[in-house]
View 1 (cartoon, rainbow, N blue to C red):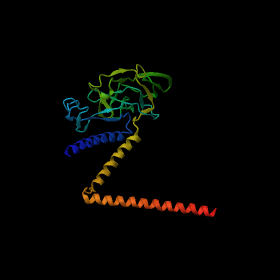
View 2: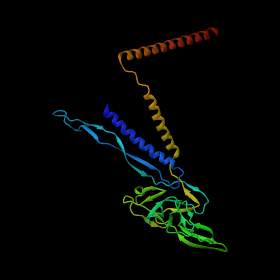
View 3: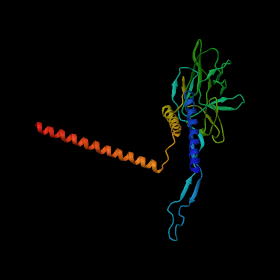
View 4: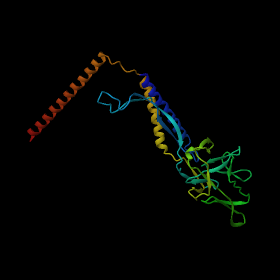
Length: 295
């Protein structure tokens, strides 16, 4: 019994971790560029009671073994970098990536972070920065006399100034791709860090060589089926709540008296069913007989 309870406990612990992952996904439904996490499970070691193919007699062998599992655990969580939905904002400094790639963000310590969050703003110096004030790389500076700002699908940034209808190119936004984006380390603030698992970034021009294209005036929302996640999350809590309530009512002991009482109730139900069937048959016969007399 203790072994069975321990195995059940590992399952509960693993499901609790899974619910934590799902809760984080739900909490970030409105986070720009967020990618949902998925918990990955693995089974634990097995107790080898009997090896498959072991001799059962001088001339026979067991066709199967007897292996007892010891439970499960969460082995890892992984980011699912699926394309999210693009929501139109009509803001010139909102830029979404449609396809593969990350924006390069300069962090305060001088290292580069990578992000799918394209909700950029202008700093007091007129430079494009993210919501935390970290600068986009390569740096894009918008002149004070700029009337309109246009970002092309290939990342070309151009402006038109007052009194000059001719567009001027002022910068080029680049994107970084990774061989294994799942290996990136999420650090919060919508940023990822390069790791040995992700591999080095391949920096290039948007819409070229497999890079995603840029969409101005739009933001990427989380690419997750919120309804199914919410149902799973609610169902888990409903089940755990029902289990806690049922645990308050101990099951009766299966002794001779309990079994005898159950048998009496079963016999009574059978007798009642037979009586109802007999009455129904008698009523039907009388109805048929009255119909023939009237004819």
